[in-house]
Image (cartoon, rainbow, N blue to C red; front, side, top):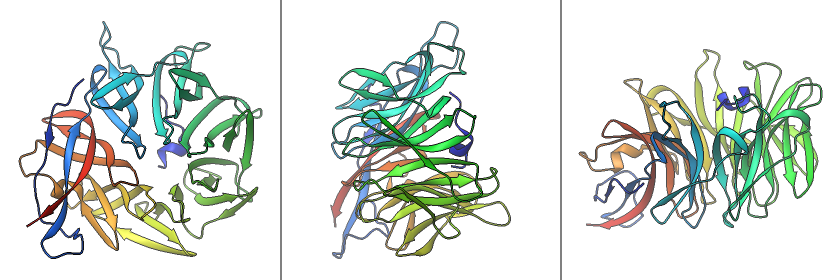
Length: 350
């Protein structure tokens, strides 16, 4: 599955464990802390899975490799709920991936199409009630859906008839080109909130990204922010900025100000998602250079691996989404195998 240039800027339960651990994430009462139970979401028969989205009902979407006779690397979009992972299929091609799910259980992502099963024809899809539907493009041959809100508005990227990539909004049967910032040539939408405000990235080249906010037909730049990945219902935006030395750092955009979230001791970090109470998740390099999943709240970035039992068998690497109940999904390794995970908060009182 090819990931767009702009994206680059950016079965069973094998183990469920609960452990009380102290952390900097205090609940406000002395001796009360939040830890997490962790669930291995399994695979669709292959050796790898990654979770990309979660709704408030705890339904999880992502992709998993499938079992093929020649061990070729093919992956299919999945929906996981109540301990079961379901293959959502494709648009007739070989591979697909699910990126986001809303509270109605509608899923969006990207799939190979039947007109080019070898991987050239990749289109955004919407999956609902067992049916995967191809979303229209802006006249080109490529599209990618990255987010859906609870009223069914979908955003992502689409190629135009002249080959440019533009941020796109799908609403019912209407496809809207969100345009680019002045002098930019390409753009991609990454997040949308309940009010229909859209965030993403607009750029002339991969090395000159500018975060944007699209609201009611108008597109504007978000300061020196590089890529906006997610926006919550209060209008707070999460993403990352790119520094002069080429590293990138997780940031928030709130009340016209950019807030640097820091790192876990390494040289780079990326914020992927924010929920409505302002909790942010993403990934950061550590002092050893390895990627670790993090949660950020009230000025504190915490390594999610520190909130698991020392001998859990997990290394949580990428946190990709968080719902309004605080459940987090992403990918890491469990006993050496690459797996999608689900974290559920656990309140512990000493």
